[in-house]
Image (tube, rainbow, N blue to C red; front, side, top):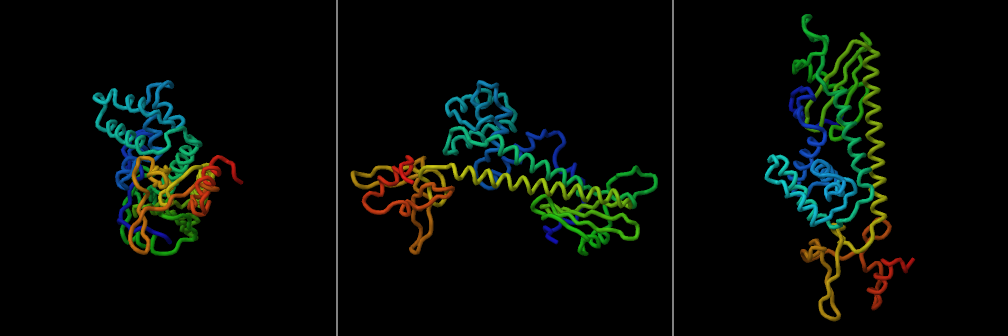
Length: 326
């Protein structure tokens, strides 16, 4: 049973996120927070949703960004800041996050699969929410008082909670860091049973019923959601591999970002990132040194030294990028 450390608490999933946030606003908030925690720009999907919220119509640069991933630099910055004074602090944080994203992204052109990739991630999120609602609401009807409405949430006795999670379930599926871990406990005396679950934050949930048919239907629904989730992950991985195979040009071996060759006299040159920064530092036997330059080949960045050796190395690299070599 793969559990995260438990916080010894049962909560209703509806209490986790503010009800007033729309789907897009919630996704943007989560995307910005994740980027801040990891000290990086927001991801493509968050940028797409921000641009979709801020654009002024189909002729705008922000619409172009939202629909295709294309960054029209001068225009998009103008659109981002033209009404900044009228924005709420929250929307102003969106503007800043999108500005940093646009400046940091090396390739400013349209992105293949831009909307499709976001749609897969949306499908994964929707699956996660449905799975949590199926197994993640603390409902214990048989513990309710006779005068309480059916379906009311209850905080279980800690001993009862430990008992449920302390023994191996009859069936289990998933991991806490995916859609959540779910366990099925069948009461062979009544025909009903219990579904227990635990999420990535360690919160634990219980759903119980004396109705065997209802129990089976709910468990099968959880299994279907996990099937949808796994299919989406396969689709996402396939699209990622396809995108890598389409990449061409020179790249840093460490970060795989585009690089350029800078002339340094008549016979020497150095490689830098597109912003002029040196290639990423890597550790060798004597300490740190810049990473080696590479070139995209069949979805991987390979060292230039593997592509060509000798006096004609530069010609061979240039020719290969132009499709003149097999």
